[in-house]
Image (cartoon, rainbow, N blue to C red; front, side, top):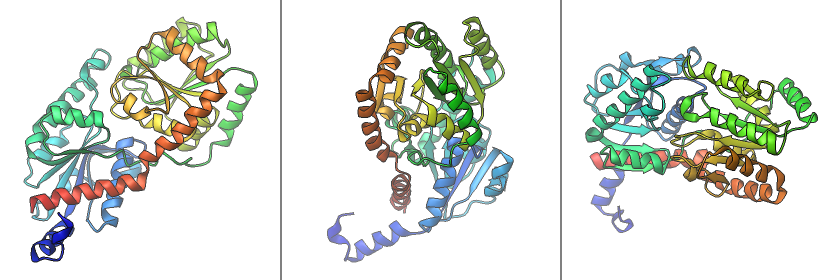
Amino acid sequence: MHCGDRGTPLGRARDRRYTQVVRIDQVIPSFASRDAVGVHTLHLTRALRTSGIDSDIYYGSFTPDVAHLGHPVVDLGRATKDRWLLYQSSIGSPVFDTLAARDEPKLVNYHNITPARLLEQWEPNVGFEVRLGRTQLERLAPESRLAVADSAFNQSELIAAGYRHTDVVPLLIDMTSAGEPPDPALLARLGNDKAGGGADLLFVGKISPHKAPHDLVKMLSVYRRLYDPKARLRLVGSPLGERYAPALEAFIKELGLEDAVTITGSVTGAELEAYLAFADVFVCASDHEGFCVPIVEAMGHSVPVVAYGAAAIPETVGDAGIVLSTKEPLVFAAAVARVIGDPELRAHLAANAARRVLNYDLARSEAKFVSLLREAVARAD
């Protein structure tokens, strides 16, 4: 709307239409408290309600601690003329069929779906789910009034899938604050390890073949031989499926790195803070990331980043870390050694990171997201 017509009857009508309150209920395949998509969905619900738009969450599967914050998708009930449905797309799910059969106007929030080729050899069931998710994403394109992605990389996938109205808003997660205090017992244990010498390399994410922690293990083997025989690698995250993690553990043992590599499993927020407090560098060798929250969290904690530049990684890191064009272990190890051994470089990266994380400010992202949804509703009136 041009500002010159705000005082005219047409302008006033447009204002009323733009601010009209509707319901924007969210449909999510799996709702979990310690999952980026789940946390994002909760923040969006709060932002919508604060802005005067009613919003509830409807889920397929769930973790018990958040069940009371939403409703089973079967409880959607009859369609109403003032309700829109926003689908949180991150994997294939039968929940989609419930959504697709409904008459309400549809919105999409796309969090990326890992290509099946990176998963199906290890976890065929997960491979099927992500392949289904890509198909479902394409099926929803003709109906979508707006599709929001959390990165320009993901937006390009939406456009390729046939979406006409798209935009980008970072994940609605507080990635810039220190969070809760570090776990004191874990801090003490990590401090004892540090007192014995050796750098601490940290990766946070699913222990999954597409995130390639095996390539980090290869890099560590080279790094210990050439630069620091006491260096440690901590892989913080829960395993995907049942096949890959045992194979990774066997690989670690084969290289004689059992005492140097720790696979933590799922951790609490306080434990994650402890691992970030002692990390010398955050490392990532993932073959596919649509955004990568842990990288931003590392930057927010002034932990320098060295990452393989796949998919959205260069976009997320920007000038706040070292982005590599290869995962060749010798090159990767040399980059890590450079970052750890060069105080001026570390200070430069930390300063760049402090500026870059401002792009992911939660309040600003919430405001943009709500504004985009209001505009989508206004276009349809």
